[in-house]
Length: 243
Ligand code: PEP
Image (cartoon, rainbow, N blue to C red; front, side, top):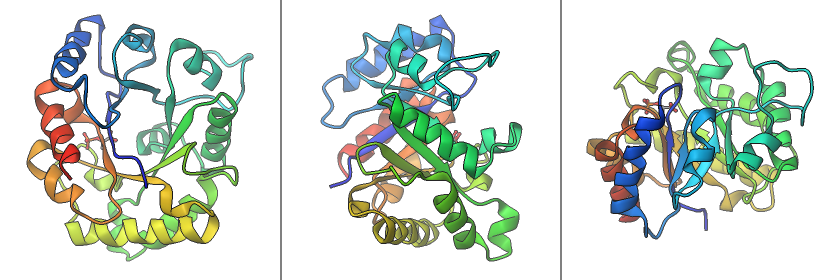
């Protein structure tokens, strides 16, 4: 069975003072049946080590170490206490021109360091309106997911770019179509394709989480804005626990 994962991506948000939100989340969900993943900025990873949550980086370099000023290796993330890393988030693809090949190399670096890679894929609004959504998904899956991927070392996050941080959410039918397609492609390529955890991401909130988690092949969510406070993230966790 795929694992159920509520994942919070704090992006470039979070100071030492923000850790109080994790304390509140721990008070509410410290003994949850499902593992909760928090991806804070690099600066807070070590400080999250004492929480009961799984911790992830938001990006990693392809190399283990070396002359790459400002970058973080997967090995460093693991050393700081992370067990996951996001790769290929659309903000990285857009802001830093990341290609599928680079993302696959980052995922491979994550595996080499013993991290689980959360590989993000998703179409732009222009691509959706041009009827290219599934073609984009196919290209990104083929190019960003390494051959060494399996259900233990990889999570796939489907995040339509036009839904991230916009308040716009695809219909549950649209989410169902894409997630079923991703599942089929993973089953075509990997013997354990049925076991991969598939997250939906893009304006998930407490108010829409239950409907999204009722969609077949949605095993959790990658949540940006609504993961920043315990008050907003908690209802999403509750909805996934009871899905
Ligand atoms: C994200 O950052 O991956 C995301 C889905 O953001 P939001 O939930 O704010 O749309």
